[in-house]
Figure (tube, one colour):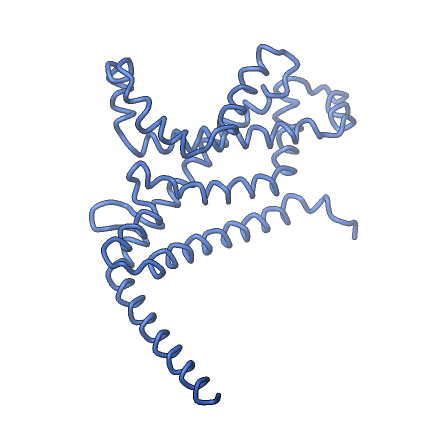
Length: 258
């Protein structure tokens, strides 16, 4: 019994040594592509962060006015935004990326227009367009829900001070909405980070694309995708920490009185 146990420990030690050696060799060849460049293009971690930051920024700018339109009492203002959010929340991001990357460019009318032809021939443009429209739809609903949940007395007090229209939204409603939406928006940002993994479909060299290339070249499947998983975990924990700090800063007034 003891001999069998010792043999198992010896086998486990050999496997760990072999695993460590193969991982070291993989990192020696692919640490730069995993982090920032393959020698020609931006790749890996740097590309994933660029996709995340650019799509989140565009989606945020898009969602602020759309969330106001989403809660408008005028149906001709509200319904187009409702259709947009329903469309992009009701279909998979992967399908949306395929439509932007290959579907739209297959249309003759798109290819005949010089600007559209140049735009949709670029894989990065198509990827950012799909990502931004997708996260913009979710963020619009997050902000619209926060607008609906505002205390009526808070709005009435602002109106009593003479605020209305643009000033009411700019100085009272939207600042409050952005603060109270932080926990929900944090989830959307993290989900968007995970969603960037479909970018390899458009040949964008993000973390997953580098891991797939490393796996194809070395057949070290566990090590290649394990490194990718570790990088995603690091980004996720960093984002969680940043949003926790933001919540402590801007949502402190919701905590218990001291």
